[in-house]
Image (tube, rainbow, N blue to C red):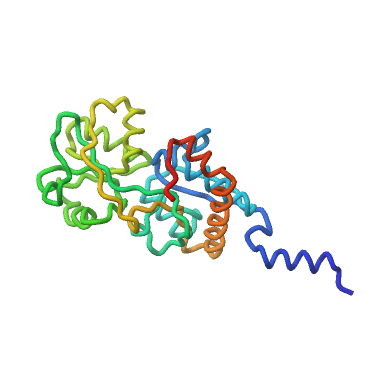
Length: 258
């Protein structure tokens, strides 16, 4: 005779595979506040807080580790970590992406205060030294230009867990002329370094919806990645309805992208 409880339990597990048992996944990225900030703090970044709450609804706990971007991509690509935080599609097209993106990050350009430079077109980059982060994808016409010139003095690549801080120091000491990154991340880092009055925003690219969307992307080497992506989507939808998403975004001064 079949045990009715056993039959019910088996059916539940088959219907909800991610929620059937408690598990933990590792999220990795370089420091890119307010998207992802310092690990182990009360404000680890809004992407980390969203992922933590959204995945908890499917009984998946989250840990987060900072590392340089190149290593973070490798760790997730090989399955040593399960998710890459703050990715755009062009950087890791073979990763597993959820349906919901979690921000928009067009390129923003910064110079020292006394500079008159503006990013008018690609010819504006002909005689400047541009500071970028290794293995970021900047999209549009800029990324092909970077790829063409990255072995020349025109493109200066920074790496490490705080590549943005390195680029700001290089800008301050005249080793680069222009820094490109996301507007809020640069402004927050400059404030942290006491540099906010020494730099200026030279311009921001128009938003390119397909290229500028920011995601938490999951490992192509982990069999359960599609389930994690679906669980994140479900959790984000719940959080948008119950107000938790808005509360987290308000904490970091972020507007909802939808």
